[in-house]
Length: 330
Ligand code: GYE
Image (cartoon, rainbow, N blue to C red; front, side):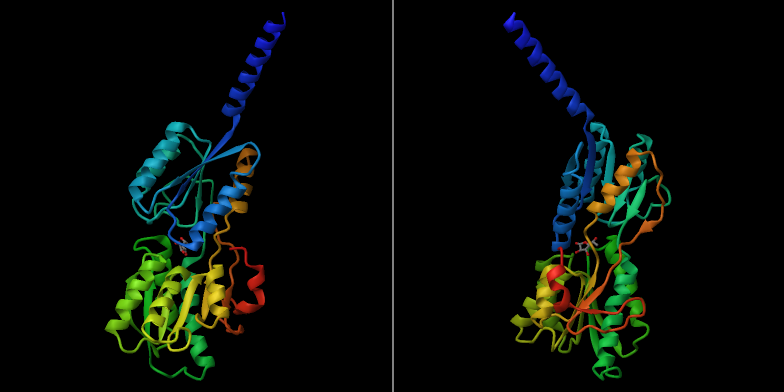
């Protein structure tokens, strides 16, 4: 009798475990890779908030910067029958076919960070990302206003633009914004414009080659902080003083950039938050509750941080990095 009871009990336990597994709400995330501090913070934010949510299971895929890996991952998610897909595209083109496959299976899609250019052709539940054009505009406008504040508003200066991964939404948008921002400052001339792929190593290599090719580089606009930090090493290696001989403006506002600004080696960083975990959790909870959300791409509020603060960019006034470094979350 005892044996029979134990057997029944064991069976009940197994069945409960199996049904609990079947009941878990599966959230799949196709991430681009691990190219920067921003990306690490973004992955951590989603892993902690979504993966740590009761009753949810996070299925994470790192595509190592390859679009074909992302396409494979998305098709895998469909086969696994996941409940929600979180998606950011390494580049902006080439997604329509696979995202329509996701739509055909009626798996809710949440777009995060880099948007696909087919956004108006597909169905999605919600979209969260940075305002890349405005971030790019803030970068060059910061440099222009800073020069004015230094009494150098009429000086002819040479600018180099270090771009992110070619074809990425963040690169396309920031480049557009960089150039639009420059229109207000005819004294600033772009002498080179090339991709450093959003990584520290490529940022350093590109800066080394620019320093060999051009005698006079006054301003570096780096479309992310990692490339700016790599470039700082190159500038030091060439015997120049970063932050003084060459004015350096980054983007993202990662902790390492704050440290460089406080150390006087970098001049400014334009914020782009990677902390999308709370946004995504809120959106999934709404989906579970059967609520529909706005299709508008939501941009989190973002600041500008620099050595002294007080640079007015129209839409935002810069804040002194040293005053807020202790509050940084990434
Ligand atoms: O700025 C950069 C990262 O897509 C906004 O990607 C993101 C960018 C971010 O590699 O550091």
